[in-house]
Image: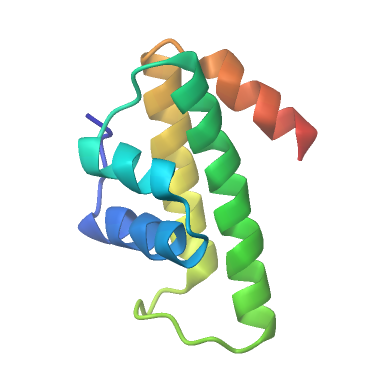
Length: 101
């Protein structure tokens, strides 16, 4: 299971998965785990799409339902996703996507 330190991490990821119409990611978040290299790559790609969407939201003064703000939650989720993928044997998938950013 993806080891979220805060419930808000999952809520934040779901918020952006819905906003981005990322149905595969919503399913993955609901399952709470990655089961393949392809899913690991999808989760990694989604993370960066979420970051980019949150930057756009910030530029447009979109108010999120979390007082800490997008940068705070993006950092928490980056640590959670990258640590989880590394421990699950999918470090390469995370690194490949990270290197393209």
